[in-house]
Image 1 (spheres, rainbow, N blue to C red):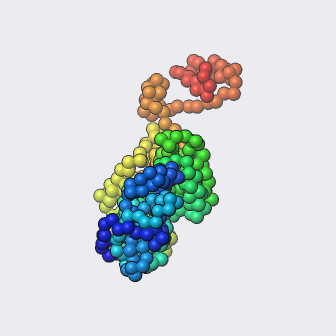
Image 2: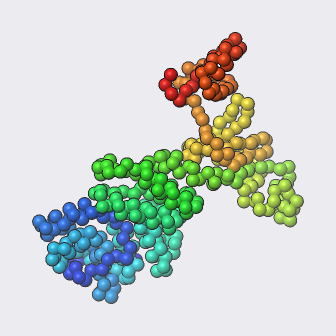
Image 3: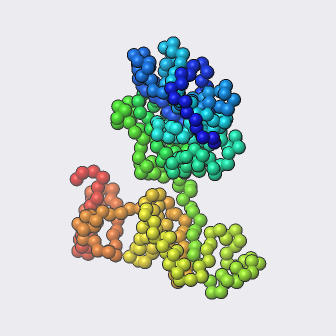
Length: 378
């Protein structure tokens, strides 16, 4: 993209201005009304807009100031102050629009439009984030896939929001949380679920999208079919690893089939086995839990799942998630129950008070304590 050239305070005729083919900015109806009030009272008070002047010297494209232009057109004003930026073509105008507006109120969904537009105009996919000078979060957004139906639902919901509120911000993590769900229909259901979670008709100062943690919990049911991950296996076989590496034909007789190869990592040393343990346990949202009877589990607090870990001198394996919920007892409850590490806890349910009394009466001489847990206040 060519360097920008400026000519300050040019008066540009509105009739000569074209809209940018991609617009990442998000303008609300209250914002436009406020600009109209300013234009009515003091047209000179409208801030200068930014315009890309293409190399043909005939095409001028708005790259910052669409809402200002839209607002003053209804008052018979035919010119507006503009900074002119000389560019080569329309793709350069799109790049300039994105660069100038990243501190504005944005619609993150429109970054997909900018990405596709530039790809169609010959830009390399890997270079586009650099050309647009995107932040880390917006660069990450371009690497995830949001299906057409959930995107359309989000766009319609944003259209509804901008008609009500002055400030509307769609966080990137919302799109990421939806895109992590595989099926398009499930993504669409997730959008509808999220909309139901948002309070209706609140003041703009109270309006907000659900938090990342709230969405992770709400969307967990849509990801159950994705829980069965391939096992991660770190293994050493006496001489077999070296043999397989030297003789690829021997893999057909190995205990691991060729199609399993991406899931298997041969570990030739104790240091790499220690590294495997590090990978398993040294993740902020994971905990390695050992039950009193010796079984080890990885508890993932992000996905709310638990996976069994099998380990001996040669093999460390994380099995696919069982998709079972994880139950934990707060420490103060454990202290109240006088539980020590390794103490077993048994649960039994009763349908009637009579059944409970009979059970206690039968066991009172053989148990240390009984705790009653009820869904209702007793």
